[in-house]
Structures are given as C-alpha cells and as structure tokens.
Image (tube, rainbow, N blue to C red):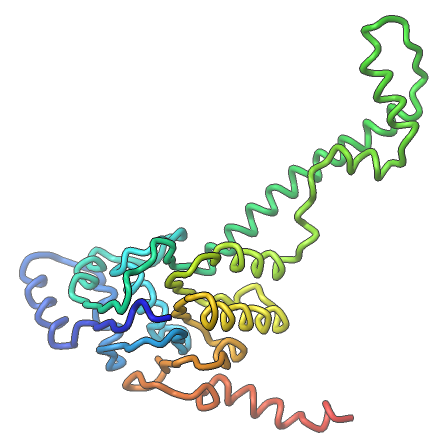
Length: 287
C-alpha cells in the first residue's frame, strides 16, 4: 500500500534566499534543519510500500523522517530535535498522497520504545514490592499461634487457613497480578511494535532495531514485511540494521551518498563491512 507517494524538500537556493531574508531581521544560533538535507543533494523522495533511509550518524536520515512526520502531522510521542526555524522549513516542503492518510498513522522513535520499557520496569518494581509483602504475610499466617476468640477474628482466621492449605507460590500467585518481567527488553520492544502497529496506516520508524537482538530483528523484519504485503501498511524506516535493510522489496535511499541515491542493500557500506568481516572468518564457522 502507498499512502505517501512523494515528498519534496527546499533546494539549496531556496534555503539560501530564506536565510538572507532572516539575517536582515533576526539573530540566530542555528537554522536546523536548513542546509542539512540539501548538503546531500536531497530534493525529492518517491516512496514504495517499504522505503528505507540508510546512513550513518549525521547523514540526515532521522531529520528527513522528522520533517516528513511534521509535515504530515502524524501522531507521535517522544519529543525530537527542533529549532526556531523547524516550522519554516517544514512549510517549504511539499508532499503528494496516493490515498488519504489513515488517522492511525504515526511516527515511532526509539525513545517511545525506551519509555514503554521504563513503564514496564516501574510496574514490575511495584509488583516485586507487593510480592515481598505477600511472602511475609504467608509466613506470618502459616505459622501463627492463632485462636479465634470472637467474630472480629474471622477475616484473620480465613487468611491463616488459606496459608496453611496452600504452598507459598500458590498463595502469592493467587493474590498477585501477572509480572511482565517474564519478557526481556528485546521481547518487550518487539511486543511494543506489534501492539502499536495494529491498524493499516503509514508508519515512520526511527531505528526500530534498538534494543533488539539479531534474532529479534529478523522477527521484526518478518512482521514488517507481512504487514506491508498483506495488511495495507506503508513503512518509512530509518535504519542501518542489515536485517531490516534486507527486507523484501524495500526501496533504499543511501543518505551517505552524495547526492542521496537509491541503492541495493548489498551495495551499502555498512552491509559490505559485515560481509567482509564474516568472509574473513568464514573458516571459523565451518569447523
């Protein structure tokens, strides 16, 4: 599915004209994101169902993702790097839609995933504190020297009888909500994507491989491929993960190239570095 078909950024000449006008009227420390993408010769992007922005730190791939998200006014959670001129820059961009943008469309950054995992950690800490309290309660009731002397003691009697009739783990489990710590950080991160991306829409993902092991990255790759193929997702992903770069049918823009150009994933410098490394150590894997 293609919702966003095309996006254009201001040219260097347009940015320079804007700068000359602003210099006359105000002082500034930075004009970010002006002159970031034009420095790489990026003027226009044409999108596929899966489009990937590849590049190293400072290449502008995340900047492009944020500009697109802001221009389209999609939902987002985590704050991002902006300047006083960010809105001016976004206003100079244009875009074309092939289909109306679904309201579920969203920008998902690694900070959103980290915040989700921190929330889970907070829940777990509360559950752990409750577990410790229940363990103490169990031991106190199981071995209590208790005699019922009035109806006021009835509730305590039930606890004592319950503790004496159950194992410690059963007593605690029946009184404790499920602990989500059974999932690792990688499992929690993968779970976040599968829950957050549940409806057909345009999703912009900034380095979704963070916190994911290679095995989990391959699992995410399969989830994204299937979602784009069968469930009307359009994906724009900023990444340098070789697993995600290998997604079937992905259109890859190399932001390290000057000018930015479309490449096959096997042509990318980062992927070639992995290939050469494992090629040099091939005999060690074949022992």
